[in-house]
Amino acid sequence: MNIYYHPQYNISLGLLNYLHPFDGRKFSTVFNAIESLEGINIKQPDNPASQAIINDFVDGLQRRLLHKKRYILRALEIPYIPLLPFSMIDKRILLPMRWGVAGTIEASKAALNGNNAWNLSGGYHHATPRNSQGFCIYNDIGISLQEASTAGLVSETDKILIIDIDAHHGNGNAYTFMNKKNVTILDIYNNDIYPQNNLTKERVNINVPLTAGTDGHEYNTALQSALNKLEGDYRIAYVIAGTDVLESDSLGGLGLSITECVERDKLVYEKLQSLSIPAVFLGGGGYSRDSAQAIIGSIKSLVCDVSRQPSQKNPKYTSC
Ligand SMILES: [Zn+2]
Image 1 (cartoon, rainbow, N blue to C red):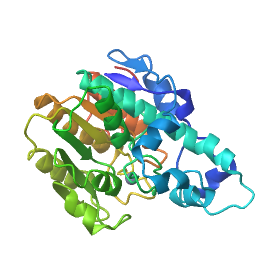
Image 2: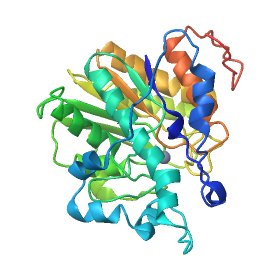
Image 3: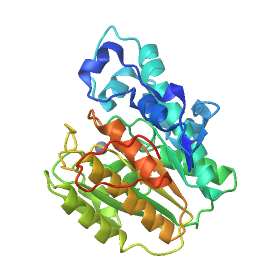
Image 4: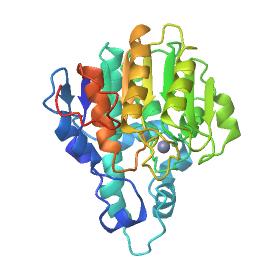
């Protein structure tokens, strides 16, 4: 499996760390734990996604809004701070996200050439070509398909699959692909939290709303049932593997243990393998202290023969 990571993914909010629960350093924590594993090829994007690539994707108004401090802070769910220069927000937060977009672009190209890939960043499923919200500025899946199309790797008629297993409904992807019939979306999410958007929920082909507090057993049973509905010859599958489903996450409102979160990713991966669909796993949300450990566990479980110990609730994965 190709793992996409760049040191620039890491977000350093400085004092803003106190205003948002996101652990911007978790990408490096995951990377340090997995970089020497067998079965993993570490890949680095060469550059962040360029302004030209982003401008090709977004509409005219959004092009301008992406340079407005008040708009960006609202999308990042950070209170307006008069003395904070936009240049600092761009350098500390938006630039790392553009590196994340570049990782999704490269991971997509790898998958379209038959290699499974995991971008440690990306999965900005609340963003659209017209709007940024929910700590998502750029819709990286849409941008990566735009770039794959330009490179001749994917056509308008190729079937695309999005499996969204982040705790939040992926309203940005549903909106972005509202009229794209070749894109199938499976979304399993906590229906009692942000975002509450019925129009985008109706766009989802396999819609699995859960109630707040759903535990890991119930979640994975519902997920397996949804995965069983998938069939067909998809060109590529994107998986928004947000770890905000963890019971320790303060925003997701679901109740998965680390082990159950790892099992969740394995269920998805095995389904895609059984259908011979190349996968791009994306970081998505994840705001708890356990987020990095869950991602590390998942990557190891997908590439290593991890001996499981069912009696241990949150096992530490130390080696393949
Ligand atoms: Zn989320």
